Length: 428
Image (cartoon, rainbow, N blue to C red; front, side):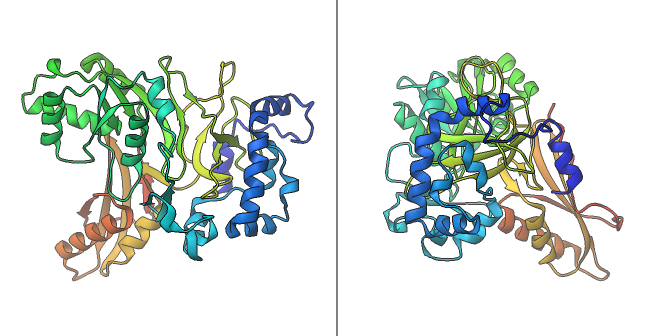
């Protein structure tokens, strides 16, 4: 990130403090907030150092040993692991670059999220830890959920299904697409809960209305939504027009559940089985409430060592709450953006477009119309190029690179100074 962008994103994080000075008011808060994790941090750091070649090398590069990290706050001594580094690490050696402590064949599943990043799932119930989020929404054995997250390669569909099964909820593994079949299942079976993208729920409801279905006979009263923002206007639409209470949750393919709403709908409650920190963008130090920084996560699983992984998401801890909470999603710390729940990096778009011969210039624009994300790529062909062939090849290459269907248009002119990647969305 350029220095100016870092300063803007970090405008609320101007107070510097020494983590070793426990009498400092900010450090006193951190000591209280994080002290419950100290023993688990000691254990996972020592275990990872002894059993994960990748983590051992990372500690040595930072000139650290487990003796240097005895508290959750002391984790700040270890540089944050970036997703770009994770991609490189996983392909550098067997067992995901030495990040796992057991053979890959011992895992239940191995997913592949965009990057690509491989996400191993342990052989245990609800390994992604979504049950607390569903319980907070009041979902249990009397519910029937339609799960409209993807089940192909990426882990979201299985993540939420495992969580639903852990609370006794029956699941329809609907995935993405096939609206007609999904609407039929909702009406015929009496579905009570939707799980998926908020924009997908809106599209499903609108499709049902277009086809003349009587929504008043539906039983959906709750929705668990994730992977993209659900602005207040969309939440209000679900509640007022359809009587659906929305519970917005926060998680990632690598880490699973990192926060959820309860009936108060006041920020994301943080899990007790993963260490979620908000850290200064420049120093990596954990921040006090109300200060904006990057979400950084440490898991305590011993089969796959993920310690100090930067999510790239901006948030802040809330103050004056009974339990630790994040205020919600405040943007991205880097260049990646989320489009329909999938991270898109400008570099991947650039590589895809430039792999097609015959394109003079291009511009990718992320927009949002009627609560739906769109990625439009305008391409300026070189002289004597076949425009139709260029468009078809570009669509194919973009889908292969970022796993999204993009709108590609041919333009007759495009300013040389036009930015290659623009995000025009407004989250009001």
